[in-house]
Length: 83
Image 1: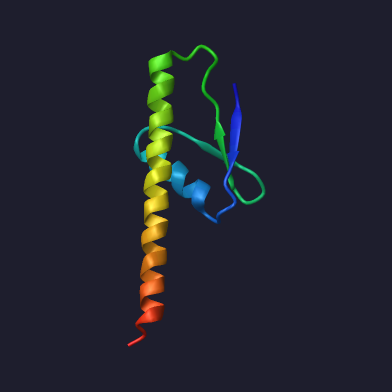
Image 2: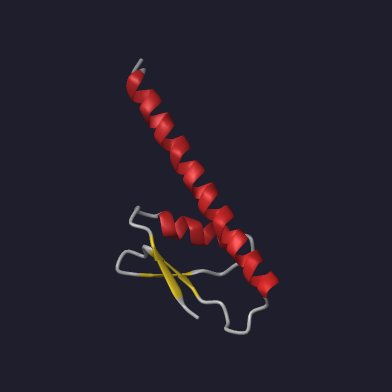
């Protein structure tokens, strides 16, 4: 089984891969700009192990999204209060 998830935000897929790796899940990147997360579980994976891996991916995406939102909020706050 192979699945690719393209995320067209610069650096997003790389950040998700790094966060997942810190949780002991290896996710390769693909695409011209490393904007595709390659999901390659074995065909014989146990359901519990698959669920655990998918949870790590979900958690990693959530963490990266929250970090990006915090950065954007900080940028917006700085531009509204330049002094």
